[in-house]
Image 1 (cartoon, one colour):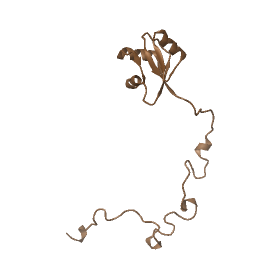
Image 2 (cartoon, helix red, strand yellow; image 1 turned 60 degrees about the horizontal axis):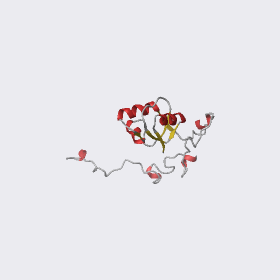
Image 3 (cartoon, rainbow, N blue to C red; image 1 turned 60 degrees about the vertical axis):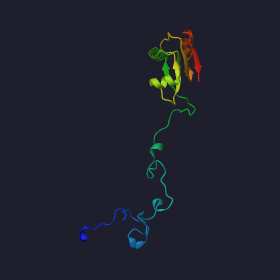
Image 4 (cartoon, one colour; image 1 turned 30 degrees about the vertical axis):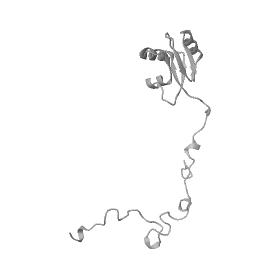
Length: 148
């Protein structure tokens, strides 16, 4: 062992620069912030989307159309899909958990049954909404509609 092998113990030294600790440290004075301007002052925080005074993209792009904040979005499932699922699993009652198990919806989605396709089995179908044609087709096959 000699002087060329000596090293400080692990964790005893820090690599972080300690700014604002006097002029003699070399990192005092302006504390690496430069002179004047908003960025040099305490409490400065840039607004989201700020582009240095240039007109931000959010304000440059033209706005049009209408977005309804009260929109309720449903996952559509047709009668032919319900027919296939009921035949494959030999079900008499189809609920949300059956649609989730089959991978048609995720657990937080709302379901609307649409009348595309034909239904030949007597079924009790549970969903959040039904179209008029789907309701008529399910009841014509002898089944029942249950709105959640």
